[in-house]
Structures are given as structure tokens and as C-alpha cells.
Length: 425
Image (cartoon, rainbow, N blue to C red):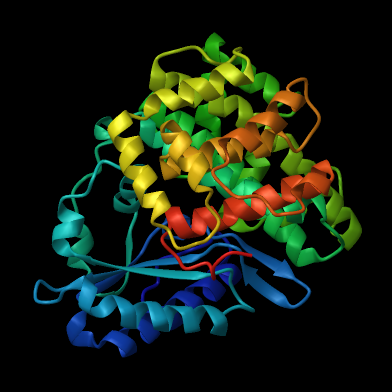
């Protein structure tokens, strides 16, 4: 069933992205069978006509993922179809690697959609889904998302997801060379960091426009009207208008305008420089936003607090019972990278989310020299529940940080996401 809903402001890019979505939907229907599906929904920014499709030397390429939800009839159990779908989506990712950054598909029943948990991800999903195959009435029957039900800590979760992604990208940033694909990846991740930081703050304010451009405009108004957010404005230095160009890039792949605004060109070496400099600059913006979001969740002003106080404040989010239960889960992981002594000795840091977040922030802020540098390096080693490489003592600062980030990546995969990581290394 063909759908004509736009996915991008540009007709050429729209046709390109829509053809990818159509191919994915057809493949899923052929894999699971029409009788196993009521509809396939496209969600995320492309469902709002904001796909990041860029022009490259090899042609159009979508930096935006293709995010689909397969809605099952009442007679079907998601668990019975999950393995088949996952295997086919993995092959689909390989088949489309030259055209887009990734494909993701999940299975849900109408019941799952009718009673969603109060999460930012569900709120974003319910406000603008598009039926790309099947029964169009499903969208009409979805509940209206209620922003007032979303707890403040959801903004922290959204920001946590972005900061972990950025930390795992750091080795690529530090070694960014003339490979244009690496530069595009860095720019796209930076756009996600900047705009999801804006989104996280807006959710705390209780009003989030649908489009990225509108979100940036609302955020800038908050900066003007709220003196307590002054450190966020200061973190943007003298270029708050840059956020609007990031929105244009994320919403429509406007790469030339972005690179020009950042003072560079699309020449390979220059693009790498621009991408690296922009990433570092928005690290500082994100660090200030982290303090604002965490402070809002805890009811404290942390914008001017020292870093040690901020990290200790984060520990207040964990209860002893949750920490102990998660310590047991971490100890049962077969990833072969956890230090039993450190996990047992620091149950207060046993939450997968807390461990990943604190480690990420410390590593993240440690990528540049700061007044807190010595404390940061010490805290990274204290809070990491990982066994470090046997040659860690002989590594220089950058090499040690890369080793820590590699361990964080594996911890993120094995404990937070439950994926096999291939044992110790």
C-alpha cells in the first residue's frame, strides 16, 4: 500500500527516503506475512517531514534512521515473531548500508499503543506516527499524548542517551581525518546532541513544539526570559543562532548552510576540522545543560556547583535496594569486563544507568583540559566498575581514556542493552 506522506522538505530527498521506507515495509510484510500485521508505522523525525538526507559524491544518503513499529493483531504474540524480525532487519541494514545509517523495527500490539508508559519516547511516538502499510485507522485510535504525565527524570534519561552516544564517538572525533563519512557522522551526532538537549530542557518546561526549528525558537525565548538559565546561554558563547542552522541540517540535510555557518567548507580536511570543533563546542553546552536538567530533577541549583558536587548529587537518584539488585545483575553479566571487587564495593554506583552516565560524563568532560582535570581523571578510575587493561599503568592520558571509553562501550552493550560482546579482551 503506497503512502505519499512527505518525509523531507525537499521533493528529491523525500522520494529517496520514502523509497527506502517502502522497501523496508515491503520486506517486513514479506517476512512476517500479511496475516501477522495490522499496520506498519513510521515514527521519529521523518514522520514529521524532518529526515536528514544529505547529498554526497556518491549520491543521496540518509543520516536519519528508518524507525518502524509493526502493529500486531490480538492473536499474535510479539515474542513469537521477534527472532524472525530481528534476523531480517539485520540483513536489511547490510543491504541498505550504502543508502542510510540504519533500520530499526519493533513489534507492538494495539494494547501496547493504547496504554503507553509516560515516557518521552512514547510521547514523541504518539504525536506524529505515519502509517506506511496497513490499516490507517490505527493512528486515529491512538491516545493523545499527555506531556503533564511525563516525570522530570525522563529529560535526564533523554540527555543520558545522547551523552553516552557522544562519549562512544569521542575516539573518532579525536582522530577525525579527511574521511567525509566520519565527518558527516560527527556532524549528525552533534546535531542530535544539541537538539535533544534543547528538547530535554523544553520537556521540563512542559511545552515542546513538534518541529526542530520551532523547538529552537522556544528554547531561545526561555533563555531570554529565565535568568536562572543564563549559564546555558553563556555556554553557547556568542553564537546562539547556530542552533537554528543545526535544526535546518537535522530537519532537511542542509549541509552547505551548516558548514558555511561554522566557518568551513565541504573540502574533506576542512569538513573534518569543522566537525571536530563543533563537537567540542557543544560538549560544553551539553555539560551546562546536564547541570540544569539534573538540578531540576533534584530541586537544586547545580549550574554553578563544582563538578564533584554535581556527580555526588546524581548518586541521590539511586535507592539502596535498586543499587543492590543492579549490582547482582552486573555481576551476572558474562561480558568478562567487570571488576567484582569494584562492583561489590560500590553498590551505590551499581545502577547500569548511573554507572554509564557518571562514567560518560566524567570521560566526556575529561576530553579537554579544565580546572577539574586531576579530579576527573581520579574519579573516572574510581567510578568505573571495569577491569582496566593489564598495561594501563604504562598508557599516556589519551590512550588510557580511549581504553576506558572502549570498556564503557562494551558495558553499555552488555549490561544496558543485553547484547553479547564476545567476552573479555
